[in-house]
Amino acid sequence: MKSAVETLEPTKVKLTVEVDYDELKPSIDHAYEHIADQVNVPGFRKGKVPPRIIEQRVGWAAVIEHAVNDGLSGFYQQALGETELRPLAQPEVDVTEIPAKAGEGQLKFTAEVEVRPEIELPELSDVDLTVDSTTVTDEDVAERLEALRERFGTLVGVDRPAVEGDYVVIDLKAVIGDEEVDSVSGVSYQIGSGNMLEGLDEALTGLSAGETTTFKAPLAGGDHEGEEADVTVTATSVKQRDLPEVDDDFAQLASEFDTIDELKEDLKTQVAGIKTSNQAVTARDALMEKLLETVEVPVPTGVVEAEVHRHLESENRLEDDTHREEVREDATKAIKNQILLDTLAEKLKVQVSQGELVEYLVSASQQYGMEPGEFIKTLEQGGQIPAMVGEVARSKALAVALRQIEVKDAEGNVVDLSEFIGSDEADEAQAALADAVAQAQDADAAEGADAEASEPAKA
Image 1: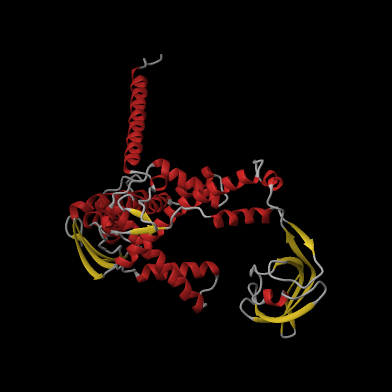
Image 2: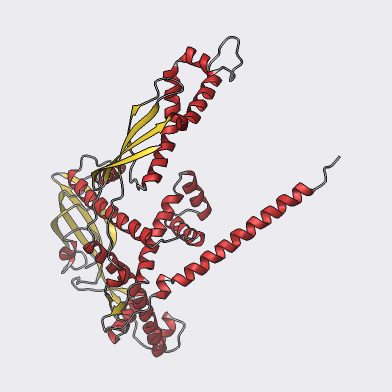
């Protein structure tokens, strides 16, 4: 089989494949067998009709069409392997030549397909990354302590105008023209949270219990999302959150500690742990940003448009041009990141262990609210496991890359991220263990087969 590649665009190629008759013959033989099982020819048993009779009865065109349909996918995959192309979408295939008769000729076809572009990554050892220090300040501890006090605070009604931070129980009605399009009653809302309607915080500020005001705002959801409505809101009650005193009694209420000093020390340890973990997250994000700044990544437009269409179709918003542009921007960014990380994983020869894959799948199953076994079975049935392996490899690629980079904090100290990014030695040990387990299982299986073969036959 001969394969030739013509680059049409940085992300699109035309693959020309020539398959000689001998390589196509297994597919032709299979076509004869399949057709022989389908036709009834007097004087021949079903499935035993000779090829020359099949050609007389159904014609060579039907035989070769069946053979080409049967073998085309395999020849395409073989050509991809030989040319080391990495397709990102389904190809557009055009069969340009087929054998004119049995025993001679060739199959020739072209396949235009969008592929992962070749990009040149920088030397990782030349990349400089800086992350925040893990030094814990008094303000950090005070912030954690305040959040803890909020959790144990109590709401108390007040007879005064509402201010930011207060909790107001509201009745709300939205009207467009003469039509009431939405209403809620008895809803508790904290002024300043900004999670309901635009302008609601300003409208409630200064209201006392029993007072009403109106304002205009675009609706945040429903059939009239984005349309401006006249909104009437009534504050039925105003409450403030009273926080407990910071003392030993509070420490005993909010934790397993007896004194407030012990609680503060524990909060300090918690903040330090969070900051250390954040260093790893920041380093990964900074590395990704640095690579994207350094490397020009061509993005296949066809792949982007297919993803945009799929997304909009799932939301039934194919005619929403404004949203289309938002989705296109997100899809372009996601595909660009995927191309970059796939290239990085390949360059670093990232291997995904079975344990890493299972850990990822268990975590993903929880996000979908499914049992791990059921989730994995669903993925296997849909042929999605290779895609999951790719996801793990991309994530791991950043971690492996960080092992080759000296990360420093804002004070110039070298940061040890091994707790979060692992080490090459640990990966090698895990791979060696997996190989040993596989060899032991193979040996057990061979032993069992030998024992079964050596059992005397029963009379």
